[in-house]
Image (cartoon, rainbow, N blue to C red; front, side, top):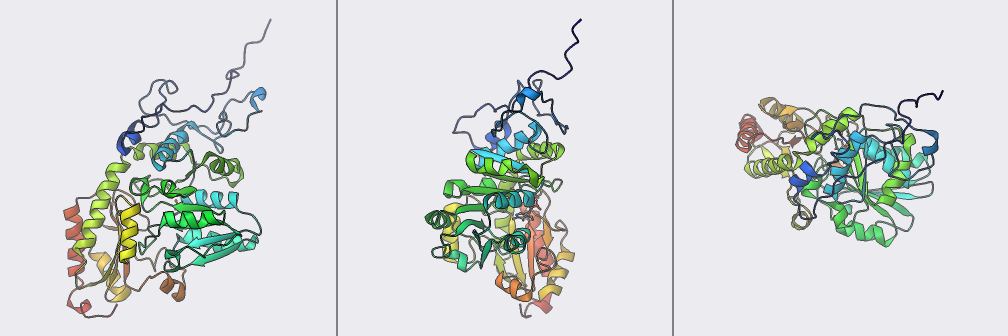
Length: 417
Ligand SMILES: Cc1ncc(COP(=O)(O)O)c(C=O)c1O
């Protein structure tokens, strides 16, 4: 008598491609229809959550190590995570995308997969604090040289990289002062010495800016922000050429896999990314211009406002300017604190990119460990408040912010910065 086949002993499910869309479709159509594989999911319109750690894997299937191999273990790959990865890949215009359990997971895995002892890494202007810590704390301990450029220095890339430079890390717009760096010019400078340009596109989102089309080698994201869009998940992504993403994908020992449930939430949120970002662009631009002449505001920080050169770069490389605005308030940290207390629709919390508006004082949150010299170099003054607008009605946000500024009263009008 032959014993019955053990369940699941058939061929393992191979990673399956998605139905291609025509080149000409717009971003929202792409986000809604760009990751369909109905033959796979019992015909479900909404992709299911494959909440599994592992997959049936008969011994004879162990030979393949390609990027598009069969599913083996969720720390390596998961069918739910394939869906948002595919959408982000298409939006950024890359050959391959890989998702992670956080933005820092994506950034750490990317940097550590591509550099080695003896290399040099250049930090091209202001970077997220966690990224700066990775570059300036961990890399030197591995014998990797790091050169940190100020935002002013990063305006002129030529001569700032040398043949030992393996990787340049760039953010544009920067946090929290929304400086704009010329991605195409940095791509040329990096290319000239054979270095890779990695752009953190979190603040712009692929709706506003596509660094790969400007010459960047890789794009990284904190998908926790605009891509996730609802302040309810933590995720990260890297997008670029198959060969490069494949090198990062192979380093499964970093262990920053995206959980299937967070992947499902991300896929669901991505469908409305373009709609959300368009409203957030409008909210950012409306508030930035409405408060520009307010007596309590010493300076408005918004992409392109720092100088005519940055305005020209932003016009060239960005579709919209985003939903983050920073205000330097007269009266320092106490004015900043009182301003936040008067806001009605803007929650005081770190992070950005969600449907709800958030506000924070960078010197008390993201830059709380920075020295006075580091704060000055990053252009962070005492009264700096970062506002990350959500999708509320523009008129309501303009009114909320203006009334909170008015409430600062006469005392702040003549006060120093
Ligand atoms: C620009 C930028 N990059 C990366 C990160 C890190 O992302 P995560 O918090 O998802 O690890 C953040 C987080 O605030 C960020 O603002």
